[in-house]
Length: 373
Ligand SMILES: [Zn+2]
Ligand SMILES: [Zn+2]
Image 1 (cartoon, rainbow, N blue to C red):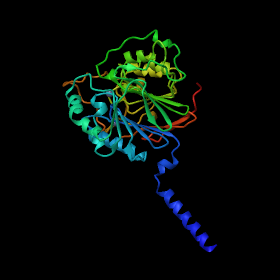
Image 2: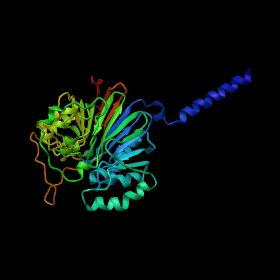
Image 3: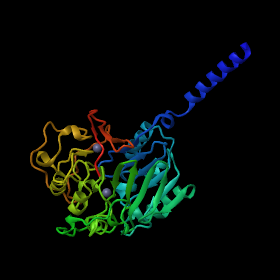
């Protein structure tokens, strides 16, 4: 009797020890967490499923690879991850793959997903794809995504809705109704690589989010017209930095996001045209921005509590008028810098379709109830 009690006690202590040694994230996580990371008008978005499986979309800016990889690693650490299970590089622009090699030198990436070779020649992308990228995926898995593909992640339905200039032809479950916003569509202008973007739709229980990389207006039209193949979403992520070569009403208004989170920079995106489209989007509750944008001015910006980042030397006041967008080139004045501490915007979504958005700079958060759809 005494022996068996002692044995039971021993086993009990052992069980507690084993439980305590297991990673806490795997034991206690019940939400889908999405980190929108500030990479200064580039893109990096980290999805962490309740099982602890992870999907990273893009790796920040070339030219600031150490800074941006550091910011991504901070989010990875906050999420308690030991590896990245899937990395989607939406397209071959430096603000989307720039921090990849640096990031891969710090953490294991198990799968590299892209749309195939670059279609827009450029010295940096050409060299990266010839010399740097193949050794990175040689020891992992390499997947060229096609529209309609599923990315297997336990507990989530992750669907590729655009890739290599193609969009899904079959509507997502529950979608496919005629899109009234197609009637007023005006084609946009774009470079060659943005329309190649890998676009991703994520379903977790009743919660839905979409991130189209830098997919442009003309491809939004292909995806959304004449029938809306996406349906409605809770959260629209990215918005091509808030730039007007994307973000048609045929896309933004038709998917009726309750929340939009814009990956803009200090002076990249947040242009008046986009802000008008987003602010007038039916059913929108809030726009959250990764940065104050000079291109918005007080006229178009959201309240500061919805904005995650300022600059290294914040201006005491923001001008009322939006600043005109600058054409890049040798004569362009550089934007105010932000190389110091950066803050993410985090979404924690639950199976029932409710979700909480948190601004890491000021701790401000807001919980949204499940959508009726
Ligand atoms: Zn910043
Ligand atoms: Zn971009």
